[in-house]
Image (cartoon, rainbow over all chains, first blue to last red; front, side, top):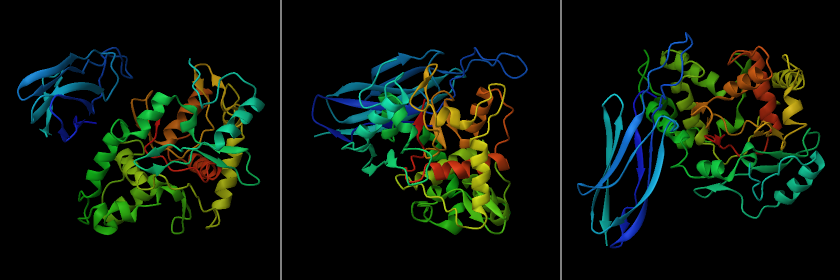
Length: 108
Length: 284
């Protein structure tokens, strides 16, 4: 797949200070750099190397991704929601491009 | 390897496997996705070579099964979404998209995958979903045919296939000359190929439920294709799986879309009759 398309699943509403589960999935080939093409030349590494999740501008979760992670990486984590706001998800590619998406949550 | 409750345990004799199978057959809760139940075990009709027809789903670990049972975690849906976008994209000299003729896919494509391969009178041969899509593209849209294993084709077969999810596989062998293709596929299934001199039946009929090295053999059913295979790290067609099997037994594989593979697909659809379509399934 040429373009990387993120999918995220965040509950639309939560109660104050509730711990919610967030699921994310992005399409990416995660080329490890260890493989060779049919002519024996190494295929250059191209992976998503970093993922961050911000809530109202503050980072609540981030991680580095390594070459051994499989294609189309799936990440699941929890976050505590003190107030209504917006989650922003960012994936950073080796080639410098960033893929991001946002998701709103309302605290009732 | 862990032995999972409710799933066949490795290394037991074939008779024991069947005994365990019949206990599992009356499972109270069928696996379901968003309320759509999947029949992963069905009784075989008379004259069927298997005592019970079992989906590949049942042979996988509960972790792999869980991936398939949630549309969000199922990585096959990345391609389904591409297919959904392509459905309404105008292409070709006729200025049409799939949607121009077929409208809403969730209505018009319901059951299509379940009945494939289907006899095509004009072509005088059975059509797989890939054949049908390409005929639409070249004959009606004036667009270029897609390659069998291209992302475009896999996305579309996955999207169209999804509309039949949960419906029983039911191939119509009465139509046209389907029986001769079925016969040809059956011959293929029981013919030994390659340096390892193995037929499909040696693994998938005589030894399903047993381990072949680290992998548990399934019945080789086709109801989940195209599917996301974790080993491939992407979607793949049934014919890619055929080719993989033939490579494994050190045979020279037929081409994707070849008459041999279409005949085998026809026969396999009959072998898997009654199983729910699981497209896009997830396997290891």
